[in-house]
Length: 133
Image (cartoon, rainbow, N blue to C red; front, side, top):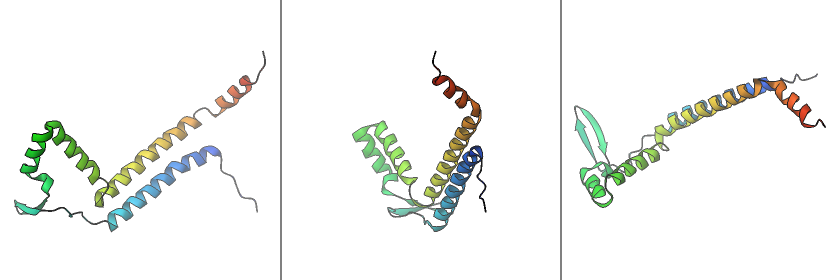
């Protein structure tokens, strides 16, 4: 029994679909198994009936000390660093993996589309490259 070989352009379109499928399934599994991170909680605030956790870095004293030693840029850099570090923990990691999978899938789809746009151009260029004048 002969096995049918798919044309190269169909295989190029299957790669982004595979990346998207694996990425979104992985993100779903991470979301279902991850818990909320509450390791560095120093206390809780109740505002309008909602309970919010407070970490030491969110306190006004910490922010004032940081601004005193490093200025406003240190406060902004600290906030950015904590935000980026938070993307790789808990349920936020699932969203990060999902968006990375979507971006990689779109990028590889457009690369496949660009490659498939003019398949005979490569054959014409190769023929000219080895011509002697």
